[in-house]
Image (cartoon, helix red, strand yellow):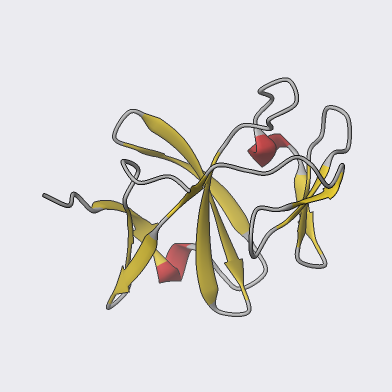
Length: 105
């Protein structure tokens, strides 16, 4: 059975912004890129620092700890390229943002 949990609303996540939320027992980083919402575990794969402490700029996430860079649309590593973020499926139902934390990619 699929379990989609509410992570916030579109009204609270404007285009070009990111925000940290708790979904179930998982810390999630939401990013609104060109009107599409993306969800990642709020943790850099390098040293587990919260990505929400970093910044979202020009469609990339930049970790505050050591400036690792990730594509905010895919979670793929930009620098270093071999790294990637744990990504969660997202649905939008009206204004509600729903995330499935049990199905990370």
